[in-house]
Image 1 (spheres, rainbow, N blue to C red):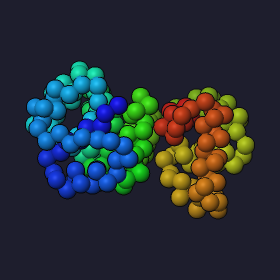
Image 2: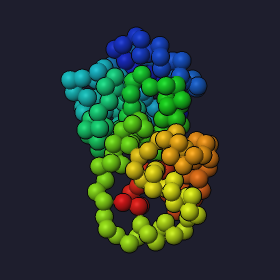
Image 3: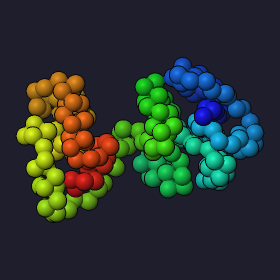
Image 4: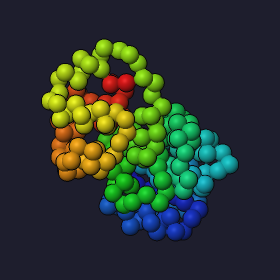
Length: 195
């Protein structure tokens, strides 16, 4: 899948270019971008204003997958753009590995959200008093339960490692084992299952 990038900010383009580990093309003209088809498009949120909704709808209707990057990402904006059909949303200045992760997830037809926003989203999930959570946790070892409960509360791996006096790598191993045992793909799915 061809990767196209568009921004009204030359500094962002330069930052993104350093992060992208596959072939890409810069499209300077928004009208030209709107005619592109079957591509993975990285677009700066401000570059599609004032009608970002319309730009996004046009890009998606042309069979494109779109990653919207925003200098000041907000959960409300993320929810709105994901509802329209964006495949990803994140911080325009995020680290290289996040951009690579976003592109890989989108190429695999998954939705990607900046981790900080994922944590906010998890915190917004209403808590239920369902016994399902206890039933699910019974499938895990005691250490996996501890990790799962902290993941559910949106703690990052480093904080979980400090709380449990283990390494972040061990936390990641417990998280992966937990996801496998509970048949979920990531921490958001885990939070949904356990809330």
